[in-house]
Length: 237
Length: 192
Length: 192
Image (cartoon, rainbow over all chains, first blue to last red; front, side, top):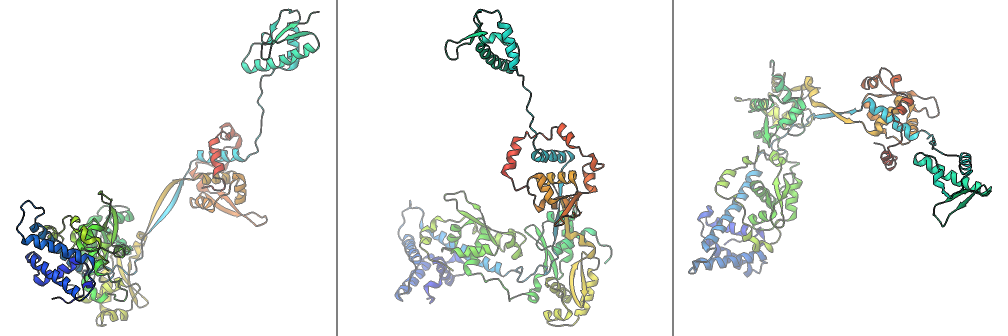
């Protein structure tokens, strides 16, 4: 009987592996029934000594008890997984844990860099020196200067020339054209040919001229309602 | 020594001066040309075999180190790394031989939960790294070893892991059956 | 390699791993005996002569180092071509048109502050140089362009730079780029 404390084991698999080792080194040759009995006896022993038994050990104990009964009782052929397969899987798990434990030990025993073998103590070191090579051409340069200049030079505001008919011109035109006209005529009929801005200016000037001529009683104005056509005719003598 | 091949001298000098292992590509970048570098590395490794300093390849990167059999002259006990716990050693071995693996698989193999600290210590040592996630329910994180792991343990590649071929042939590196363990591990206590 | 003298291997390894040059006495302390060490050092120095690594003695202490004629391999120069930043090209243009100018004048003309890095880049490129100091309060540093600047931009002299009238004729003074102006407002203060 092992006399180690129950909490010295890293889980039930660790304990099972240690128990299996007491049977045989070749894990494939161990008796699962015997292993189950060993484990259950160990747990019983621990409880008899009133030691704390971790829950996972108890879970394993009940699973092993189930496995044992399944292995011993007459089998239902349709039962899956069958108990032999469960036992084999348990063996494989023990083998794998043992293999990993051994592999870990072999890794740790290797010549390890910084403990057994050493890289050069004082390497000169390799350096990569980066040289920035900015790229720009003459156009970039002068365009940049243009941009700076445009941004910071005092702005010079030039008002563009627009086609305008002066009031004097409009007065002269309207007076001449309405001299003998007696029929009511829309103001638009008195505007000169030309593009839209020019005609718009002529309309504004001619309207003001018409108001002035009406004030001088040289023409008459008529409009039926707001925004209706503005009608003009020469004043009755 | 008379007239030595300039390329051998150059590769020798660069590897000697470097603070970390170098791939042939990194050496080539430094020398301004890759021609003959692979061959020069082979020649140098052969030349240095048996000397007090040897040229070794680890994970595709090359460096000079002292010969292993001289460890007794050089071993530095005073600043030995924090000794790895038993849980740490087993976890490292499981990751190295099964990578990439999930934490649940590591626990299934050990039959006990691993504490958060165990993986942290391995990652802090630079030997283990997160390696993506498995495309399965929960998308668990995967762990794998690093180039520094190969460096430290003197392995040219994972194929160099002691006994890995035998273990694979024996089926001991097959995918881990985690389902069987659920119940057992669920309530298991801490381990290190 | 056949049977190498164990003492040569040991001295080789100890010197390689050491973080500083070692006296023969220090090597002897490491190896547990001084016999033959002086001779081994001589043999090694002879063996390594002509290789990429040499064993040298300075003031009675020995160490390995990269062969002197290969020192240039330890540093690797790499050109990085990158488009000059907007702040950089504007600063360069202002210096070219107004040289010699102070930094404060450049900022006044640009209407935006310039970072120290901007002038550094231009000087590192070899296009701008410090050109004395202005004899005014604070004696500010003046900047001017170099011959390399003329070369690079294909100018025989600074007089070849197009004048303001040329720029206007070429439409380069039209403040029509409203998108650009908006960008300017957003990033005002910073420049590269």
